[in-house]
Image (tube, rainbow, N blue to C red; front, side, top):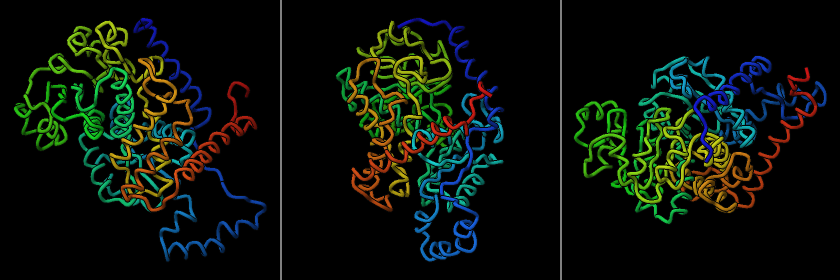
Length: 450
């Protein structure tokens, strides 16, 4: 693997920012609302608005499920954020977070054919966020929580998943976890180990790794084989701050209670000793994880170093330390763990069955299908997970999620695998072709030709 200097990586990383500062004001945003119905002449407004619109209104009043048939509710997703933990920028506020939420909506449309809208809320209060999401429920078929700080993000997600009648998803938790599990399933297969036997060190105990811990257990990892580390060291029942964890960081305390039964103490180095797998979602590196700590792992070690823009350890250093498989969050290294492989297809599948929720089991099915797409192409140490440009990922993922939702009884409508695949494929294909057509017709302008 070619070594790259920090300076070279930072120079490469700066280019998208330069382009963004030129193109965001040029386009004045990334998404817009356009009609999807025919407007032959002005008389058609009598159909789409008053007086004709009263008929479908009365129909929905009599049966609110008809909203899925007579409005775009079936394909609407709200991307909700308070701007309190945006990417690597921290608490920058709702207006400053809007470009990110627009970007998320763009990915939803192009990759999953989902009509997503940014909803940046002017409150940091978790109860107000919960209430705001409940208020907008009639319009949407699903909710994507995004860039909300922890620990409140856990309470918000858990409450809304329990009390809403449409699926609620937190991509920083469930999206990262789903794609990580997909890569792990294939990585374990390559090294000839079993999920129930592997020992896992989780470096970082924020929203991502807490969700990862839950999902890898659902996927077969034994809780007693997990050791988690936060900024104060290894999590265990005898931590000096256990009273604080019990009251304010309940998810961390749950890890203290269910993992590390030997109550091993120490920090990252001690957590990694003898581990088969390291999954790190902590602070940017390099140097957060040291090569000599990788040397202390089990044979055929697997290292997921997911921090951006710089992974906790360079991939080549992890390889030099003995890791057989290395994944990062970057596209310029092999095995990118990218949330965009997950949420567009997962919501496509959930929307197509009018799901009431997205369960952990549905996430696992998405992860399995992601892994299967890569396996069908031929997995190896540098290819354990699909790339984002493999568009068949998304309809296949949608079908897998929908099938599990139907099996679990959270679907309002059903359909055969063939029907649902065809529908998802058509919707996604249409979304992409529309963008290409608008570019060709100069409805989307090339700034370099203006």
